Length: 153
Image (tube, rainbow, N blue to C red; front, side, top):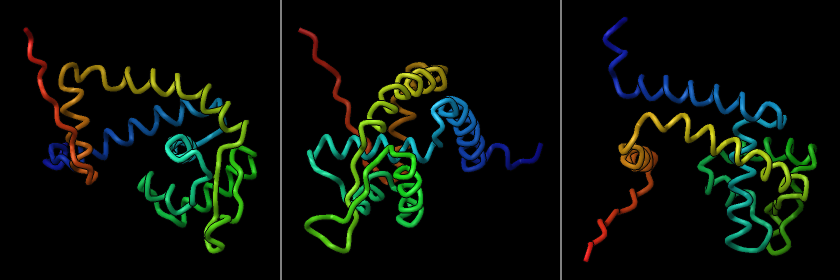
């Protein structure tokens, strides 16, 4: 093996490919891709925050996904009747999207499988799991959350 195998970027790429393979396998019975799952889950999160349909551009920002790719994937999700996509009432230039009943049901079935996969994949990190998550947040441009140890009385 070459010296590149120890480079963090290369290692991250290998782990990301392994993760994607596992996620594709878990989501295959639901007939959705990892990107579709990401957008559905992100849409649900934003809807819960606002209680309203979400602007397509806001969803792309929230999921840190390319706006054009997001638009294409949302069209597929609409065709599959997992979301509703209409012109935004307050901004005629924007699309508003919301989960359909079928999309909500699909997420409810897929999320436990995804949580189990996530746990099994990351459990080998043991107590370093939270530190690893913080490192990934930092690399993705998100400020790591601060942990304060509880004071015992």
